[in-house]
Length: 80
Image (cartoon, rainbow, N blue to C red; front, side, top):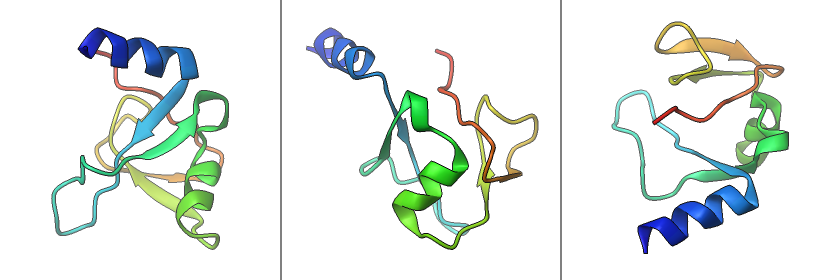
């Protein structure tokens, strides 16, 4: 069953992006889903709130954890 779910994510070419409040652990129950072609901070922030201008990012798309990035930053999946 796990292989089927992985193939579905690969077929849809989407990313799961998890949010994390400053004082809490990441919420792994409700990710924000974005198509891989539209996975910039601008697209992500548009899903949450229209006036956000930057984000703190953890993951393979940044050098430091967390790193403040602008709207043009492109998110990438974490390599397994």
